[in-house]
Length: 568
Image (cartoon, rainbow, N blue to C red):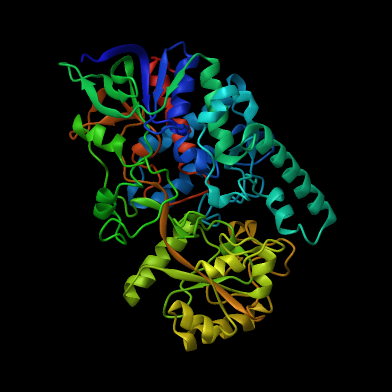
């Protein structure tokens, strides 16, 4: 049976933020755009994410009077990327990022809010900032998508509250204070009532937040311009002409094989390889078989974009010191008995929580970035031998005040997490240590040594709470240090951590125009990459909140601009 043919100007493979940004920009330049997605829903990892974008000198920061500059951002990225600093691509990102933000705010449904206390992850480094470089999509009413809301990937269940998305900052604080503040209780009750109404009439929350709002706003902008998203349409191969130009792709759809011919080019934005155990085995030092890893990425993110590129002569940059953005993950048990993935963003910084390996010793400043935490965890476990894992430890008071991982604070029940083996409890630290396979005597000694200075809000061993980033995720009402409190009110609790990722860094080698390069370093005509299919410009480091999505959206914008022949 002959393949059906479809003609367009731009074909985008993958429907996350990078792909959709490219599609929206191309559509606004009058090009016919088709986005194809292998899964039954669109949005990719972006729809499950926090939705933050790291873009220095962005318009919301300028409006807020933030004193930043391209020179300061360059200095910071040179420090963060070290020997892997890519001058051309970094400068293209810093030049185009603010323009991309302006374009989206002025021409599309995508609007941004500034994270006013969202610091760079190493704010004391040269060029680092205490705030201003991270922005997030403004909350969005899902009803504006009409029937297309049904195909939007839902948020990651483990980071919602009974399915309801929760914003960071003040909104999250209301949830922590729900039993201690009438104002917070009223705020949360109002949100829960709205959420219940949405479930009744729509089957899901219509108040979209974070990455769900980002994807929804981009999708709405694309649909408004006549662009299409085909789901259940995996790409099997790229079409390469006799002249070496990529002119389209072959898809397998529910209606059969389709040959898509794209006059201007193809953008690979399929989300990297977080769910590909073969490439994980090659590039993740902690995953010796490829399976010692847990990712919150959708199951479809199996490296299709990278393989499609390699099939036509592209190469993957595997030289970065870290092939992914690391994050500690715990595995709550879902109602059907399968294991979920809970990325630990906030609880690491709360006072009264520490992390230890099986030796019973701490290994880092727990309030530093999740990427730094992950590197320290791997390093210490390799030194000690055995499984790459760690445990968060807290006491009863801390558990009920802040929760721990997937365990929510009071008044939400928590006993079922103990029965299912997610949360461990011991009357004493020694009993807890015995349960989790951690040296009981050393655990007690570690906590005793931590508690003395902690009563004065100090952490002389690792310096928790000494940076703006540390403090931004602590408890602002806890004095004198929002990140430090003793662990002394039994019973005691633990949650096991394994290594996970928030996106892969090792991607296709590209130039400053988002063009994919062949093995000689020359652009492959008609082929572009954005998001995690492109090699990260961050040098294997994690400089700030949104360093995946910020470049993804920006290089999607750059790719569309280049394909349309525009200079601006």
